[in-house]
Length: 146
Image (cartoon, rainbow, N blue to C red; front, side, top):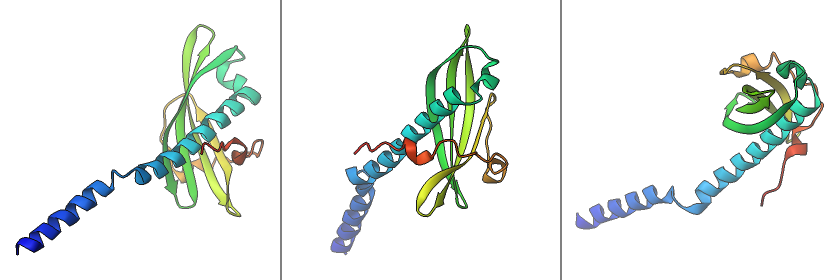
């Protein structure tokens, strides 16, 4: 009986501490970091090269912060949401962005994009109403951090 209890305790100990091993958290962190870098580079490009003046009423602006909040997967769409803080004129403005990524022939492609001045939660069914016209490929913004 004592051997059985000892076996269960050792098995429980291994199970609990296996979650803290470096290869488990490293894989998740690396993937999230790649997505975060892609998101930041993509949003910077989008705001500085296309209709950014719509958000800033033609005023000069400077991006001060881009933060990726969350990545979730709904059916075949990976949705990344985040915020962009900009200094416009003499005040700060926060914009909220969502991008939808789909896989085509094994590569991720940016298929949907929306940005708003109010915080929002978005589902894949809503995001598909905002198709992204391929100006920049998402894969352009992948940075190999290994």
